Amino acid sequence: MATVRVERTEGGFEATNDRGARVAVGGSEEEGVFSPVELLLAALGGCELVTVEPLTAKRGHRLVRLAATVQADKIATSELGTITISYDVELPEGDDKAAAVFDAVARRVHERYCTVGNTLKNPTPVEQVLPEL
Image: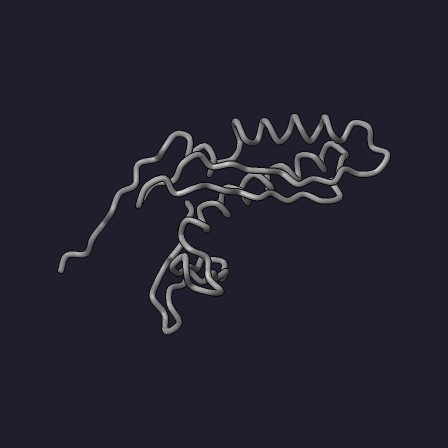
């Protein structure tokens, strides 16, 4: 089970997980924080990269650089358009098979193995539980 707590703090809002990681959350105009939409994009990019990296390395092709830029335009007040993930990769010198391995792994991860991506492509119901006041 994945659980994150988001709460208002003196400095704004903060998300924490059970392992003690923290990230500041705020509006899209606030300095030094991620907006909720940016966190969604980061979750997708992070999911793909942390899945691609060990799978390529396990096959003997550790990439010199592995990064991604994840973008989406707001097409309505509360709606995003297509999300695009653009990879930035540097292959190891002299490794003639690294490009093919990266390509195959990245495609499989995007199509089947990234939990965040699969959730966005096949939306999961979101339930709200309000306290009895």
